[in-house]
Length: 308
Image (cartoon, rainbow, N blue to C red):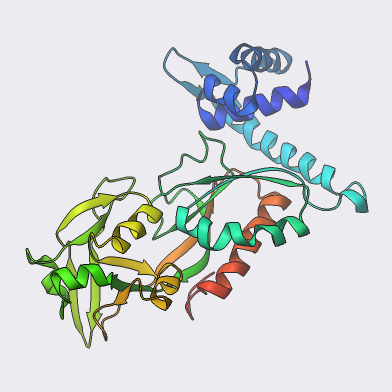
């Protein structure tokens, strides 16, 4: 039995709560993972996991052992990156998930500079606006806009997205320009709905001006759960949009979008990098988080007085 492989297999089963999912993320067969965990239990003479046909639960001894295993695996990972000056740069595979517009417009265009600094990091980037199971899918971190609903995650605030309301010239030619946010509740106007991945519901809007606060839902004929498709729908004239400045800016410059409701303000949308609390912040993860923070400091800095 390779003790390192056995400990790694055990840790992944605990995190995924499944031998099948652990095997998939380790690129091993389920039989191999099962045998490694069984051999580890035999060596330790301790039951680490309770198995049923439906789920896997860690025992009290297993939970205590898991905490030590995670630290040991992390220390081994760090040791490998500091053996010599030639290997001092962070290396290895890093799995992240980011919103599609942020990937397309900010992160991916900046990746050549990232890889120039960290050529040994193999970045696997999931691009989506869905809720990601970081543990079950073995994802190192996610970048997400909005307040985090999962309070169990560790997170760093890396930006504040300033928001505005926009429509395409074709929409305004057909429906006219609304002068007050309440008009979005009328049958005459339409928004493009953005679906929350966890709730399946349309995000409401909240706008303020001179002490007046408006919160509404808006009427829509089309709703979508992807940021790029959301923007495309607005450009096509399907409705009014709420967009971060970085998404709206290029389309304002060429006249494809028109700003609405001058004098009204929306609260900034916080942007976080989140990662599991029991996942060691490796060197490669730390430099990725720092890189995202540096990028967002140029595009959407954290508002004054906010924690970063």
